[in-house]
Length: 242
Image (cartoon, rainbow, N blue to C red; front, side, top):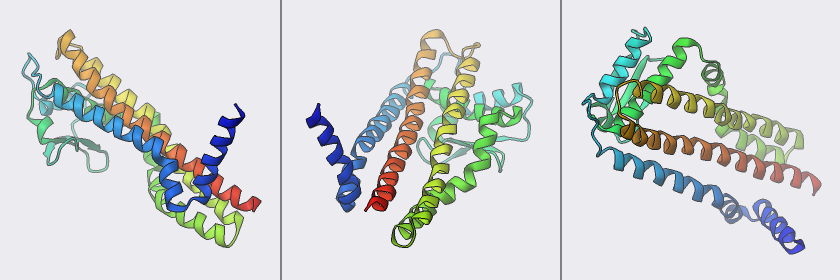
């Protein structure tokens, strides 16, 4: 046990004192998790993109239907380029569906399209987590870049400045944290709609796996932010002890 404790201590110390190599070594666990999550998304999408739904409805059509069912008429659904580039843009009021989703009748396409439409429904009903996420998004975007600079300046000039940088980076972690209920709820809404007559029971399993794999990427994103936060804390307070 003592050996393991020492090994862990040396690992964290390397994260602080090991420079660029130490940073890569420290981030290796979440890099591996990120690769696994990304692989799961791609493999599930490729598998169920080949399984066509029996109803023959396309991703673009299911998104339109969900919007209509919820009385949302100011959001348009449009095809966009790329692979798995699907998203909902609340300010410009559109749901962008990638080419492999918009015109496809696959189980994967319907799951993804319904999920993005679920975000539009969240905004329409004033779902609290998505409103909060939208409110802190500008701060989180600035913090993801500025916090590192502020911390580095603080390490050279003043510990108080470094701590301020840590607090700023906290908004990045907070954004990733609040993203989880937003994404899980959008998937829940999507599956509820698809289960109401658009997909059969066996087809639902495919849509569920696609959305579950996608959700795991957000879990990994949160873990990555928390891991980065831990390293920054070690860097700032380890430096203060010195």
